[in-house]
Amino acid sequence: MGLFTKRKRRPSRRAEAKALKHKAGLEAKLVAKNDRKARRAEARTQRKVAKAQISALQAEEKAALKLAAKAERELFSAGQVKKYLGVARVLIPVLAPLAYRGATFLRAQLDTRKAQQLGIGVDQLADFSGHGAKLRARIVNTEAALGKVGAQGGTDKAETQKFVTATQARLDSLAAAVQTAEQMPAPRRRAVHTSIADELSGVEADVLARLGVR
Image (cartoon, rainbow, N blue to C red):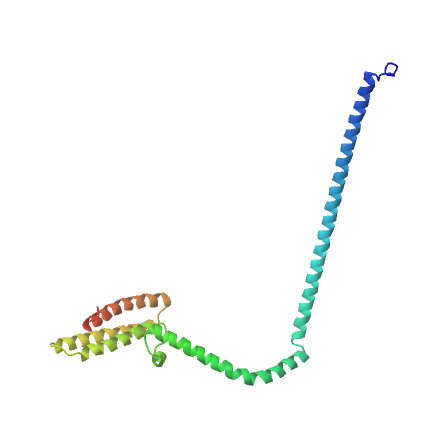
């Protein structure tokens, strides 16, 4: 049978191959086109979803603002005020003593802390106020230490008394300077306080040396 079967001519096979190639190209273009359409459709869907979500959030925000405004308007309505007054009449007798005790305790704690910072007793705190409170406290403490120097026994009591008198005069001058500085402008007052603190440190060192503290 093979002897009588007609062979396809070469030009016919070439035409078929060309047609198949052309068909494959068309199919590829169609697939790419459909893919692009699908992506565009998906993008449109996502935009619609995002727009819907934004609209929903805006609506929720608007509703929340309206609710807040309504609550604010009703907060001090006649009925609410009456309700608050009723609650207050019940709670004030209970809370007032607690609040007073709390405030008193806090004040005591603050006073104790401030007295410790100044190096004085809490009962002396009322005597030390103003910008120069710390310096005045140092002067008072130095005067107390100076009194101990004067009470010490020794071979040269005259010299010790002379030191006590001279040092007390310096302390009196420093105390007067602190008092004067209270009325000065802040920059000038700070400069004067620095000068007083430096001189007071020298006085304290001299007094402590007399007491044997190095």
